[in-house]
Every structure is written in C-alpha cells, then in structure tokens.
Length: 119
Length: 111
Image: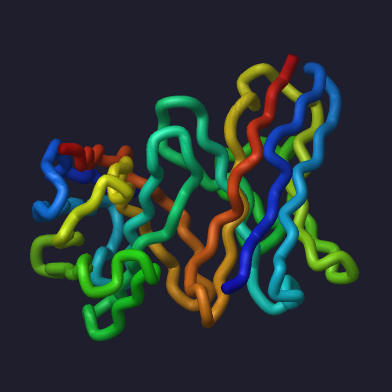
C-alpha cells in the first residue's frame, strides 16, 4: 500500500524558514517523480514543485522560485521542501504526492501538513 | 500562462447524473492527459480518473471521464449520485509552460 507521510509544518512569522519532509513507503521511491502541492485555507489546489527520480530535474511554480527548494534522499525514501523567506501567502496545507512523470499524473497523495505564516 | 477552467459549483439530486467540465485555455487538451481528483471536506484529494477516462482500482464505475477536442474540454460524469459523492472535484493536466496545472475546483452538492 502506497503511503506518504508529511511532517514539519508549523506556525511562523513572515520571513522565516521551514523544512517539510515526506516519508514514502509501499512503492519503489527511487523510480518515481515526486511533487509538492499546496492548498490555502478555503482555496483550490496549487502545484508547488516537482523533482525527478535522481534529483537532477526540478521545477517550481513561479511564485516560489528562488525561495523554495525541493530535494530527495532515495536512501531514506524521503522528499523534502525547504521554504525560505515565507510570506502570509504561503499559508497552506502542503501535500506530498507521487508524480508519474511524463505527463505528470499525480496518483497518490499524503494527508498534508499545515504551514501557517502570520505576524 | 494557461488555465484550466471549471464551474464553481454544481448540484443534483441523489440517483441522478451530473457532469463537471474542465476547459483548457491552451487549445491543446488532446495533446496532454487530464486527471480528476475528489476531495471531501477535511481530507486529502484522491484520484478518480486519470488519462482522460481511466479509473483507478477501487473507484466505482459510476465515475467516468471524457474529452471533447472541439470545445477543448474534458468532463467528469458521475451517474447514480450518492450523498457520499458530495465533495470538491479538481481537474489537472500538464503543459510545458506552466508545468503541472490544476483547475479551480468544482463543489458538488448532492441535495
């Protein structure tokens, strides 16, 4: 059974930094692209970033370029999102998701971790 | 940047059929796959349709997907509506420019 478990969310002030983690199990992690998707309170889904199998390709939505960094550790079956210079607009539930690559079909989602940025 | 446009909300009675549309502003919906996700309140999204019309295992055959190239849109149809189908539904596709795109979501109410 595919499982994705996020951690690392919390409450912080604008300008702060946070690192989210996602531990994967139930599939061969190193064989898949992975994505982060977020959802602001009461809003829709927004893709944030994804990374290919060996970490050599990374893509970001424009609003986080230069502030967020996606990475992975295949030995630990883990995905990460380093978030710097956070703003109130980054407040959201952040989901880790398995991404099939190619046409980037997202097929499994974690339960999400909440990041709240407020002064 | 391209967009996927969905109706904000739809409603229908139990037992009836409802269709939710997703229009691709790029004009090339047939060149990229469209997926659909269901999100119940307080829960993570789950996949209900992928590659336009494929159902993941465990998804009832009441859920079906299609595309209409002439209108550059994809559709999710749910037949035999049940109260448990009440949720938000999102379409998703991929474009080289925007990379991964989601529609704005459609709130389905089963009254």
